[in-house]
Length: 316
Image (cartoon, rainbow, N blue to C red; front, side, top):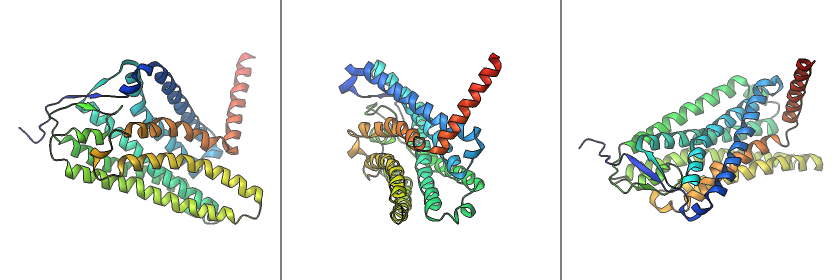
């Protein structure tokens, strides 16, 4: 046979067989979480591009982050919803690789953007005088483009390597989407080089962005501690703590899933950890990035008042 000896043309996504009898309840819960995540992130995107006061580097990065988050969860959640409704789902080999690519591509962008947003906050809080010279709209657009391109190159290389593996059977993926680790586990060819690639890619994307985020927030915390007013310190810490909760959830679950040299040792508990990434943090992010943000509150109030005035003028 040729280089790609795949005889299996479709796979079965196992989902959550232990709780399938509660499928309708979980379908409704995850549908509501999905719609809330999409709505929250779309509000951030729209309000950033409609209100000129929010067209700053921080909000450009945040709206790019929100767009990536919408794409990221849309890659996975619709399939998960259909699994809750009807149990196991079949997926073709090509669709499986496409889903895996999209999931990892947008996931990588999210991690890179989280690191850049942390550095942006570090500059704004710790180096306010230098901030305008370092961060501007051109730099934020460049960073967004650069990390999109870098993620595309890295993930394309990985998916191409997986596409050249042989799959002879079995064809049941112990997950609710085409997780590449689970897919590699099913291969009947030597997967050593692919597993090393996955491991170093995870180190590059997850750990480097994590280290940058830790450095940025460590400096932010030191700066906050030195603030003269107790009220200012409390306000700054309350904002940072909510950000850090989301960062801890996302980094913790991803380090648990991906930063392991041997992909076959980690399959059983990955589904639960992946739910944190695909359902919990995308739901929390819009709330945390906007709930305590006075600029966003004001922009939303202005937008709603404009809509109300337009309705009244049409009505009159």
